[in-house]
Length: 326
Image (cartoon, rainbow, N blue to C red; front, side, top):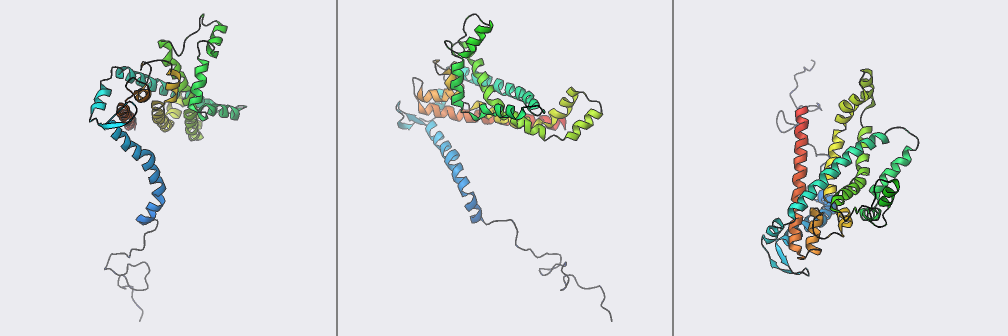
């Protein structure tokens, strides 16, 4: 007699059938790609130690300092409660400092994005010496900000600066301009330097984004008779939006926290008339009449909250617009 095909489920000899544990259940083998907690902590340990050392511990000390009272020499004299926060919010220069910070961040980031978009388009073209031009563009980003700011302070100098000499030579001005001493010129002069040092990184982000756009999309648009402006507005700009978003957020953080440019170019001016929140925080501790470390720490916490709020708002607005357009 031949054996019929009515063998029970899970019978021996059928490799595909579940075995043991009852009908419908499969034997679970060891999970692949999963590490034990000890192994994971061993690999993550250096990174966790680094994060604790450079982020968590300074943040805790900053909060403790903001709640403490210090002598003019920096010695802790006890708890100050919330007095440091109240004093920072009641500082008569805070409105000017916040306005300067808003102008500084918005104008520098906007100009950087616009100029970098054009520069990235140029750098993706095929022309003789393109490699040299690309190397030249990256130099300002590689140089130290302090050195760059000091170099521009010499270029802007009222007495022996190169810029005044050139403007006088070509006849654009009759008398030298005090770029770093005249209230009308200090902020524009600092913004020019901020844009100058921000362009290289931003342009290279856009170059990478442009190279990621498929060429067949452009060929299809040209076959359909699209003009260069239509190609840029309907294809390049939408496909470059992720790179623009990344560059904008990173530049906001980078420009907001930019200390060397503001401090170096503005160090000869007294008070807080041309300071941003970063240099305001520093001067509260080391340059003002109070020399109050506690107030400086409280201002530092406000700075952290400001940049977090600005980034969250920008990301939410960008996401909301993308959802509307999709």
